[in-house]
Length: 432
Image 1 (tube, rainbow, N blue to C red):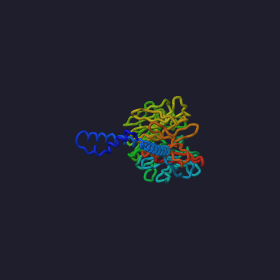
Image 2: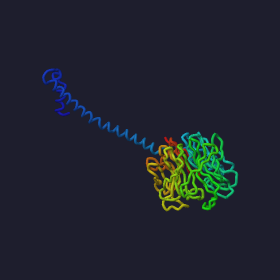
Image 3: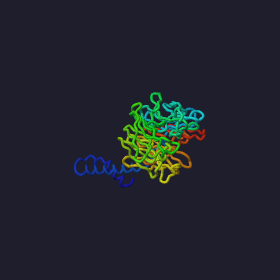
Image 4: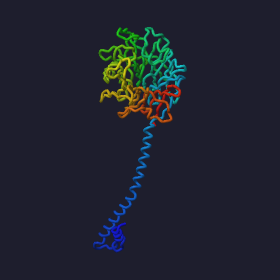
């Protein structure tokens, strides 16, 4: 302590200076008290400030480590049970936590549509044939599951139809295939437009179901082995009710892939191709209030495929890049909004291709990215695409290949690959 500080403290503690109530003494006392208080405050601050700074640094470091841990390990992942085969996938998850997709049966020669609830797998069955599948994000919370299933009826025109791409051999063709609806434990077939085959993809809470169905027109422009035209349709809400949706002018065939609770429908429109996309997906289509709109592309004129739509009308899917070979396309995930139009979401670093498959109300998008290293599941949010494998807890060692859908709670279902067993199980990723 300096001599001046000691003098000041002596004056500060002098009884005569404190006791007088007349003349300048009270003012002098108050001044001395103020000076002494400031000096001690400065001394204490100099001693405490490093300690507080150390505590602050430690607190920030702990918070940063906790935040980093949460950021790195955002999802707890579990495998969903199979129906006995080596390959399963979750393609749909609603806000009740119901996941749906398919699971191969033992021997991997056929697969069945499956519903996962409360950790258990329920075999939805077929329409009499060997295969069935829930191939798209169905989304509704009403308890309706829709998909595709083979019947026992031989395909009379030798068509492969759309279903063949979603079933394993040796029986992926040879039978007619129809859209189905499953509700309250019962499965039933959906009608066509007079043709032999149909395909169901999504349903909303109003009981409306979308997909595509063949009509009776033998179109010579169809690409073999397809013979009949097919059109986007809405089934329901009546049991046998079916409505054909309009084509984009100049097109001949179309397919609907998703519907929201407002009745907005998305899908594809184009030529009568092989019934699996390609030139049939010349246009990405939005149906609303009885009209159809081409929502655009990212430079290519094939595989412009809408996959899902949320309640805000945001649409996700995938589309070919400019100059892409229709038979070996380079695809990129896209997001379309009414405000911003269509946006190329790119691919994960090092990959060349991607597909967006599902979206929730928070605008989180999930899908797959692919390159030389194989498939990787992604989540896109806040303008950034992230590898879902970098966000899973370390106790889950399988690689997440495909993220098929995401609900509003952020729960994700899809398919993984376990290199230790060679199996590809369905998974459920739950945010922490």
